[in-house]
Length: 523
Image (cartoon, rainbow, N blue to C red; front, side, top):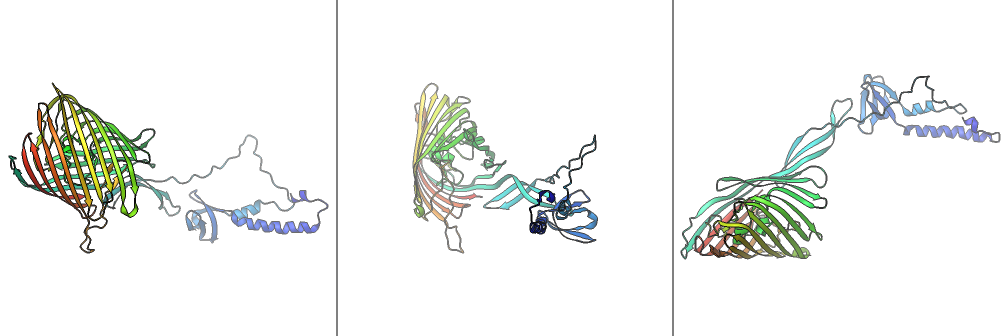
């Protein structure tokens, strides 16, 4: 081939330069080519032959590292540098063409070798990370040639979650005056719940789930069980199952997020608790505006002890919250103002509606009760506000219910205002997406060894409930409550409450003083 490029005018020195440096370039290029080791099993390894003798071949593979392959396992060794040298035509030689196939025959095409198939199996992993956590995962492994073993190259987590316990144990003693019957002192488990929460699926928006069972007063019940699909296009987040109805703050708060042992008398009377339903929620304006809407039906969770015992065929509900003020002041904490409102329509399944409430103590009896009201439907509307400035939290709500009864219409309402102050400087976390307060973690956990005392919070609340309207004399109730909370850490909290309730009319008029304490566990 080179003779075809030589002209009579070329000097001999140039020919000598081409022959010398052309050979040198070929020698430098040869090591860049890969060697191929073909095994008797049919597998091919691509890399570089380091050395070989009669007993074995030492082969360097980019993927598997250095291997020593017995000679009896080797079918063929192809060194690309040598093959290239053999294939390269000598200077002046005619370049050979591809052999033509015989008439009626085709030239076989060698298909590229496929990578080994990944092997998978389901495994369970358990570990402790601020609670007992689990993963169902599939390790991805590939076989290692010659050894018969496998090498893990990754894993796919299918299901992940945690298992936990939530429990409260109450003790209370009472002093009755003004005609109120005596209430016995008692020590009882307020609630014991076992739960699991987690996610499954693939991608950034995995499907979330929760399942929680509880027992109270020796009754076993389902507290919640739902699936949640976040980030649904054009909709937002979709949740279905047995879940909290988004009406009143104290119904939305998670376990352990309330300042006092029990919800206010207003929430105890009107909050719908947990029910079967489906909801859609979405945030706007950098999560400073949230909207939740859905349809709920039967339910009423006995563990929440809320007094709206109405079994609804249909309960459409909408809640809107916003943050007109949100400031982060560094070491001085956040300052925010939360405003919200909710509205629901209640279609009673048996044309019966009932509201009732205890005096903010689980051990005490119901002191306000409308009894069963024959009605076609009811409307509930509520407004809510939270002001937070560092360790100070102010909270207020008001709710009213219009019941379309037979033969008349009834109006009931309730209100409360509360204040919480962390003596140790903590600030409650705020969830913008849910429009609610979260669980507190002390700045310094309680420890005898380190001489740290956890977090201390002082609370004060006044509530009013009026269940008198027309011929329904459910009674009125005014309650003042003082609370002291001691957070050992994020798992353990002690609560001490003193309350004074004044009940008029209703099932049990009179005055009741309450001294109560609670040990709360949140794992």
